[in-house]
Image (cartoon, rainbow, N blue to C red; front, side, top):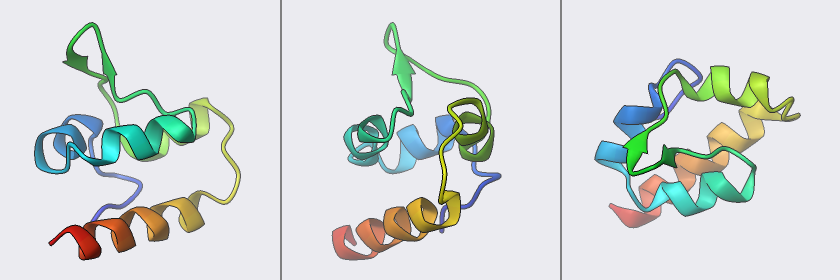
Length: 67
């Protein structure tokens, strides 16, 4: 399960199909072929993304469908 404290690198490693989805929200997970450091929550704060829990819930639903 993904949460605010989940490292971006962990998301890229375990759920590469989420990279495109997160990019739609302005969260760039990979730059120059390397994962962005920090957590999902830190990236959402940096981008001033509202409804962060809603996005996290949506991401976890995507994971459930993919498994």
